[in-house]
Image 1: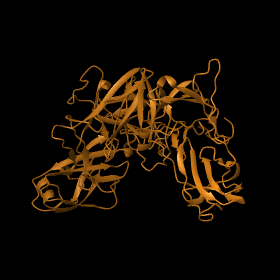
Image 2: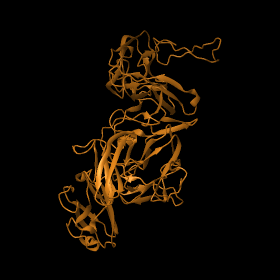
Image 3: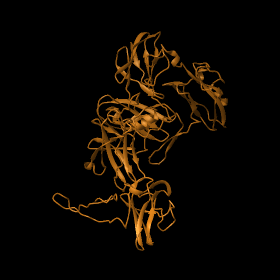
Image 4: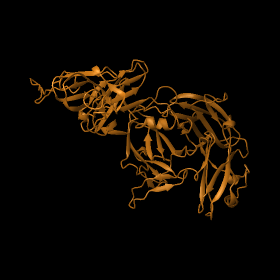
Length: 579
């Protein structure tokens, strides 16, 4: 029978493929965000021993999930399920004596034919696991004090602690060093050489006055490093003294706190059972399933220091029961994410596939919303100023003609001022947030993605040509931005002549230029001047059309009638000639 499930060992090994191609963003369901095809960061991986209760496996680097269970002597079976579907069913293990048995699921596949649907255990597939990890090397006076022999791989005084997911770590404490101590070391596995230790010796200098260092090794990811070589972890604090904290790498505990804990120990920083797993030198991961509802959280460091990088608690809304939420803390940036609000950030950091989405700030002040999904999907965008949610507009997104599954809102002009908009997508009838957004916003108990942009003040637009000034210099005659995409430049005392010609250039080069009918790289625009006078050239950077004071008349027409609001004006901001 199962004696107990080791929560500390129930470690789910989630994947870290830092350096995965930088897709711009991800848009996934707020209730259960998913990317198309392949393993997803929110996959729920469960383990059942002897057909008893399912327990959630823990996620580590490399797309690996792992659990540790203490089994009594005798025959047992286990089943691993992913999102309710059995990956390895009723696998039999014969345990010679009571011991911890490790069960691992490779979500990205295993080349071992003996792995049952990418699932292995430490009894049937011992080659996948290590029985020990040992610090050994030339440690100088520190090694003498710690009683660690030089380069002896089976010296148990150098043994590290197993953390799950292929990770071992231990902090070694010693008397303060009187001077710098140069050390050279490796981490040996299985108390012998030749079981996967890193190739070159690790060389480092322990500074004078040091009283400890921490070793961190991950045989699955090929990592062997220490708290001296790696940068310290900084923790911003807004306490009375205003001091911040700096902790050596691999020595900080990060714990989840808030209503995510349920009714027990909700905001108690000392409560056990809510610690993240440190899967790399900077990334910490925790995952849990939630029922439908709204939750708040932050993290606490070393059971006492608050997360003060942002003032407010982070909230998220779950739309259906048994939704797996993955939380990620990145110590390098001090950013805290979850897969409801920031599916993209968590997926990218952990090397998982995600659908792409992005909000593009175009150089001309326009905004474009882009979403990646199956080409046959129906997708709409609902957006509104955050100050006036009741003014929301909904538009259908158009699929690109190349059938790539890219949908776009087209270029939208939302104004020249600073923008603060809320929005969401609807994908085949399902309300969907955009986790590539930096922020979310809650209105009437609904979460929205939040888009912000500083005020747009125009860009560098010029009028080169044969009008007075440097002839065809792409950086001559800089135009003034008037707002709503409109630019102007006035040439003074232009002599009479036929067939003056000009074009519009951007940023002082010919790389981007516009001519007749607003065409990129189009023919020169021309005009005749009958008598000496000032000539103003107008250009709209949205339509790319250009007119002059000689061939275009600006008017201010009003519209009145039954049901027409007072003061309604007709406009032609695009210089089309149609108001």
